Length: 114
Length: 115
View 1 (tube, one colour):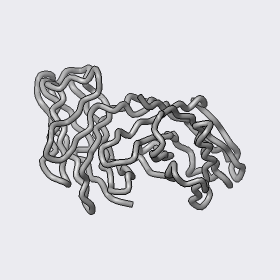
View 2 (view 1 turned 180 degrees about the horizontal axis):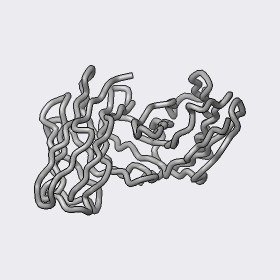
View 3 (view 1 turned 90 degrees about the horizontal axis):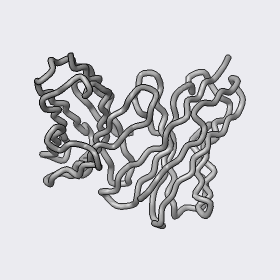
C-alpha cells in the first residue's frame, strides 16, 4: 500500500506553546488528508478534512483557531496545536486519501503537554 | 449524516479458529466504500480489506473476507484460521465516493486471539 509519513512520533511541550505535526504522502499525491484524534482504547475522532489549496473543513466542536491545518501541497498537510494545554494531550493521526478512495495512515503522534 | 456502528466492544477467539466481527452503517447514498482497518498495539492503522458498494461480490483478502449486505447496511468481517498476530483493535469505516468524502469510523472491536 501507499506510504504516509507522520512526524514527530512523540512530542512533549510546555503548556502555552505551539506544536506542529507534519503528514506527508511519500509515493502518491493526496488531494484530501484527514486529521484524527484518538483517546486510549477508543475510536478515531475526525477533527478536520484538509483539501489541497483550500481551507480545511472542521468537525463540529473542533476549535479552528486552536488546531490550525494547512494543506499547502499535494503531499503535505500540517496540524499546529496552538497554545497547547494539558487537555490537548492525545494521540493524533493523519491519513491521506488515494484516487481510489483508500486512506492510508501515518504512524501517529503522541502529544504530551506538561 | 453517515454513521457506523460496531456493537461488539471485545471479542476473543482461539488460534486457528474463525471469528466474525459485525458492522452496520447508515447512509442515504448509493455510491460509497466500506473498509476494515486493523490497529495493533503499535497503533499503526493498517487497511485490511475494502468493498465498493456497487459490487455485489464480497471482497476477500487471504484469510479475511467480508459479508456485505447492502440492503441491510451490514458489513461484517470474517477472519479465518486466526493467528496470534491478528490480535488488535478492528475498525469498520465508511466513505462516500468522490475525492472529498469523510472517512467515518465505528467504535472499534478489540480482538484477542488466544493460543
